[in-house]
Amino acid sequence: MAQSNGSAAADRQGSLTVVGTGIRTVGQLTLEAVAWIRQADRVLYVVGDPIAESMIQELNPEGAESLTHFYGVGKPRIQTYTEMVERIIECVHAGETVVAACYGHPGVFVYPTHEAIRRLRAEGYSARMLPGVSAEDCLFADLGVDPGMQGCQSFEATDWLLNGRFADTSSGLVLWQIGVLGDSTFKAGAYNTTAMPLLVEKLMGFYPPTHPVYLYEAAILPNCEPIINIVSIAALPTTPMSAGYTAYLPPARAAVSDPMLVARMNAIHQAAAAAQSMAGGAAIG
Image 1 (cartoon, one colour):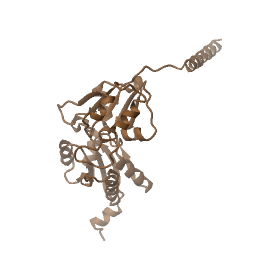
Image 2: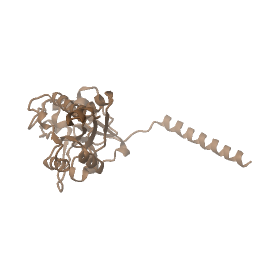
Image 3: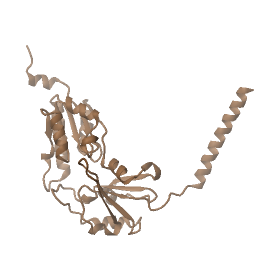
């Protein structure tokens, strides 16, 4: 006897692939992500602009489903994220090939994707994440920052403030989500950033009050420029904040080498070169 469609779906092993749409979807949505969105039974998405939403719906008109309805003004974000996780897992349990598509990099400040993958893998389902372009990637490009030259520290702003973090002032410091500092709920407009003086107080334990802070927001639409607002640390409490801001503090000093470690490394290299030279001489002899 032939199975019904519902029974067949229940018996089929579902899977999850998490993809990112980039910050500027046009041009930053990878070919790999496009292929997965096209072939999915269900595309559960959270994106930040109508162009990204339109592209997803065009790529998979039958299976595209927005998760943004889980957000609510004044609702704790962790509650929203938990509900998103449950919806993702529900679709995989139903036997569907599921794609979760998130703006930016799908594993950078995206709790639901990591949690869904963790839980599904624990249950024996196939679950994986593909890389995408994050706001930090755009920041490096637009501000001309090479994290390989002087190093870069990267923290969520509230985490850096409250959890005993510090700043190595010889490298750059990225503070994500500075525009929602201290506010764990969802807002449709401006967030409550009245804790900003506390952040300033802590920053001034490492930097002078005049040290520059680049308040950065990547362009999400083609042919648009990013927002780059340069202010001093001391001016942060009186500076209007966008929820999309990422803060970048450039190095305040040059790195200082450790003479003892430099000498030890040179000695190791010299010993290795001498040993190689002796081995080569012995082989010739």
